Amino acid sequence: MMEVMSMAMLDAGSTQSTNNNKDKDNNLLLEVDRIRKWFRIKRSILEILQGRQEGIVKAVDGVSFSIKQGSTFVLAGESGSGKSTIARLILRAIEPDGGSIRFAGRDVLSLDKRGLMWFRRNAQMIHQDPYSSLNPRMRIISIVGEPLEVHGIKDRKERDEMVFKALQEVRLEPVEEIAYRYPHMLSGGQRQRVAIARALVLKPMLIVADEPVSMLDLSVRAEILELMQNLKVKHNITYMYITHDLSTARYFGDSIAILYKGRIVENGDIDDILNEPLHPYTQALIDAIPEPDPSSRLRDKVIRIRSSIDAYDEEKGCRFYARCPYAMDKCKDEPTMLEVKKGHHVSCFLYQK
Ligand code: SF4
Image (cartoon, rainbow, N blue to C red; front, side, top):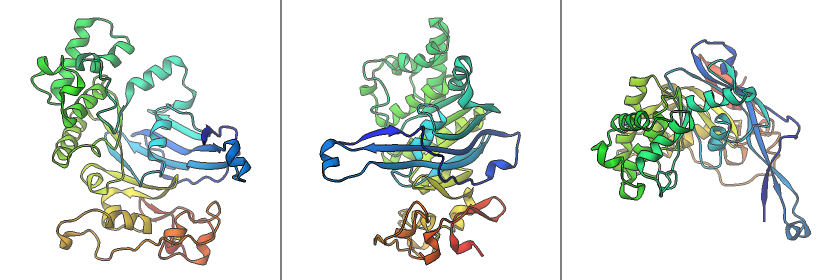
């Protein structure tokens, strides 16, 4: 049996900064600088007797990025790359082992109780699974009204009015009927609209959306993304959109960071990255986008990821080494993040002179 424990006391270890947030910009809503979260994997007595050592999982290992007010920042990578851990760190659902997080100019990690209430009111989350994220025993009016109550809006009439307005905003009609239903009486798309209404009702500055459409039917994904986009424009919402699916990222994002094994390997403007991906892992993610018409693929050449596991020290070298078709001897050292053109950064020896 494995027990996962926070490694708060571990040595700082290696960090990697994209340096994006060194250029101070007053328009930045969120500034994340070299955050780190390592987990210790504890072994059972049986595993210890079998000679298995305690291990460390560097779920997030020195990640830096910033998000401009009113923009959508996409954090993309495969399962296990650390995306959701970053979301939980930013929202202070878990504490980082290192690094800093600033929100609207305030240091999130040193907020007092009152400051934390302010932060939680202004930074909301939409979860991936609209089936498990809504309490099945509560009516929609109570689910959407709950954050209002937590944040001090005690008057029932005022609260209900705000809930009705939020349900209208997410186009759940007729509001008077939907409000008194239970989640099981709604479709997946309607439930995700409820989740958006719950995030929206406090009028937050930032919404962290963790794979918000990945569990929905293809037919409703575009509707939900379009709704989120419209709300962004209307309310000047800033999104952090977490996904493994670059086809939705392309529709929705302004800037993007590609995450691999707890580190950002490439970041920049979304059009730059999707039209001209540099890191072999980004290229592989783009090649994995299903395209019914091969002639409209984003890239002519399709990268073939290796499946061999060469002996090398992942801690010291490029984390993509074992899968990279271009791996060279020098990739057994760690590449640094380089700005290859304005705002476009990549961490790969192919671009280092
Ligand atoms: Fe591949 Fe080397 Fe670049 Fe890593 S540094 S992605 S192994 S070419």
